[in-house]
Image 1 (cartoon, helix red, strand yellow):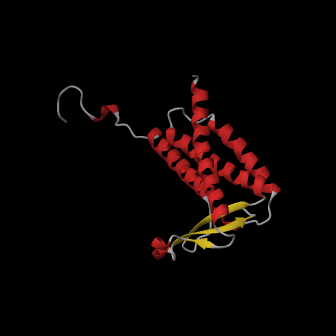
Image 2: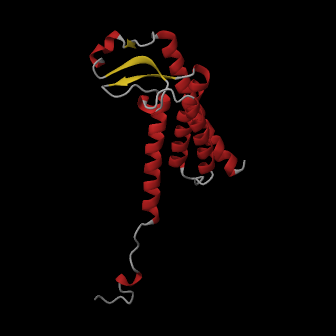
Amino acid sequence: MRPQIKKYLFLFGVAALGVGLDQWTKYLVRAHIPLNQSWLPESLNWLAPYARLVFIYNKGAAFGAFQNGGLIFVILALAVFGAILYYYRQVDAQDRLLQIAAGLYLAGVLGNLIDRLTQGQVTDFISVGKFYIFNIADASINVGVALLALGYWLNERKQIKPSAPEDTFPTDGKTA
């Protein structure tokens, strides 16, 4: 199999796993938790002030910004999808970290795009502390961006690794 095809299969495999997990969890939330209600197993009630599941719909962007953006977010998601595919061509076939980062980012974009196209809004349900309520797709985007930054930083460090000058050590066996 050609290396480029193998590389893209990896991208779409990571994205498919992420989208699958995102859509499955959103389905479970919509099926079992009433809208605008929270849920936490009784055995975990001690977690209630810190984390719980809260089913809400979000018509905006990440963290509830830009409510009712609808079509703009669909167009933006399609543009980001194209940008990821374009950028991914340039990722080294051996650089798994950047490949995973791109796959997670793609999973997040597609997971929320599917919600916008099928529900007209995004299902959010993970509530941690006083932070905004989010979902697996949002988490995938954020983890993907963090891994992307880490990957670029590690790659940059590899490229600028200092090497010792050749004339630092005497080669004639004499000491200085």
